[in-house]
Amino acid sequence: MAAADRILADMQRRHARRLGADDHAEFKRLFIDVVEQQQRYAKSAAADPSVPAGTS
Image (tube, rainbow, N blue to C red; front, top):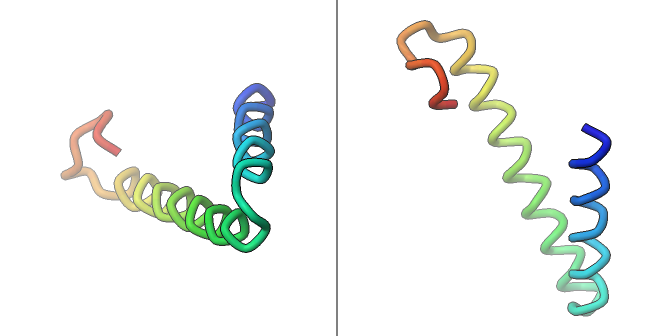
C-alpha cells in the first residue's frame, strides 16, 4: 500500500507541475471521485454473491 501511495503522490506532483493550480485541483477532485466510486463498487460487489469473483 505504501508503494501505491508513493506512486499516486508522484503522479499528483507531475500533474501539478504540468497543469495550473485550478486545473490540478479539478484533476485531483475527479481522481478522488473515481477512486471513491471504485471503492463503493468493490464493497457492493463483495456483498452481492451474484457478482463473479474478480470482476469488481
